[in-house]
Length: 286
Ligand SMILES: Cc1cc2nc3c(=O)[nH]c(=O)nc-3n(C[C@H](O)[C@H](O)[C@H](O)COP(=O)(O)OP(=O)(O)OC[C@H]3O[C@@H](n4cnc5c(N)ncnc54)[C@H](O)[C@@H]3O)c2cc1C
Ligand code: SF4
Image (cartoon, rainbow, N blue to C red; front, top):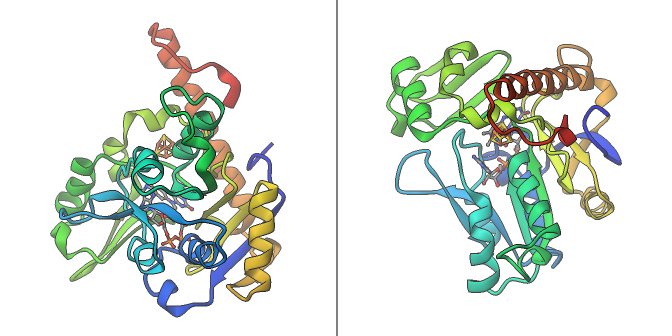
C-alpha cells in the first residue's frame, strides 16, 4: 500500500512562531516534541543537535524545550540518533524517550524493540517515534563538497539548506540553488537499496513533499501517534488543512509518485547487487 499503514494524513503548521522561525518545514517535529514533553508523554527526546563543525549534526538527548528547539532544522548528513538510545536510558535514566529519525533509524528502533540483542530494557523505553521523510542522505564530506564546490559558498555561512522541486538550495550570504542531479554522486550507497520514503514504521511521520512551503505532510500511523496528535491539535498546537486542498505538483498524488519511484529504484539496485552475488535483505519491504 502506498505510504504504508496509517490512520490519518493531514497538512500541519505549528502555531508557535519561535518554532516555525527555526524549523525546516511546518515545525511538526519540534512542536510535537515540545507538547509531548509538556504533557509528560515523554521525558526526553533524541534529536540531531549541533556540533562544533558547521552542519555536522550530533545526536543529543534533549530534556528541555530549549534543547529540542535548538536542534530544529534539517541537516542533510548522517546523525546516528539510534546511538544515543543507550545514553538516554542508562546515563540520563529516562523512561519515556522520543526518537526523531530518518525511516532507516525508525526501522532500527522497531528492530531493537522486537529483537533486543545487546540492548535489553532499552527499546521498551522508546515512548514515541517521529519519522522524517527521506529520499537520500549524504556523507558529511559529500555535503561539504556540494555546498562549497557546487553551490560555491562556505559551509559555515549556510543558514538553511533544502531539497525540493528538483533543486538543492542553500540560504547563505547569497542564496544558491543547483539541480538535484548534480548531487546524486554524493549520495550514500546504502540509500540506493532503501525502500522507505515516508517512515512507514514511525508513530508519526512527517515531511515536506505534498504541501506548500512552511507546511508539513503528516501521517499518524499508530494508535499512540494518532491519540497524541489529536490532543495536540485540540490544544491548538497546529494549524491544519486537508491534503485534498493541494493539487499537483503538490498533494498526495505527488508523494505517491515519488514514493513508488524510490521503491522501484531500490528494487532495481537490489537486483543488480544480487546479480553480483552480494547479500540483499530479503524482500519483505519491497
Ligand atoms: C537526510 C534527510 C533527507 C530528507 N529528505 C526529505 C525528502 O526527500 N522529502 C521530504 O519531504 N522531507 C525530507 N526530509 C525531511 C525534512 O527535511 C524535514 O526534516 C521534515 O519535513 C520535518 O520538518 P519539521 O519542520 O517538522 O522539522 P523541525 O521541527 O525542523 O525538526 C527537524 C527534526 O529532525 C531532526 N534532524 C535533522 N537532521 C537530521 C538528520 N540528519 N537525521 C536525523 N534527524 C535529523 C532535528 O534534530 C529535528 O528534531 C529529509 C530529512 C533528512 C534529515
Ligand atoms: S535513504 Fe533510507 S537508508 Fe538512506 S538515510 Fe534515508 S531512510 Fe536512511
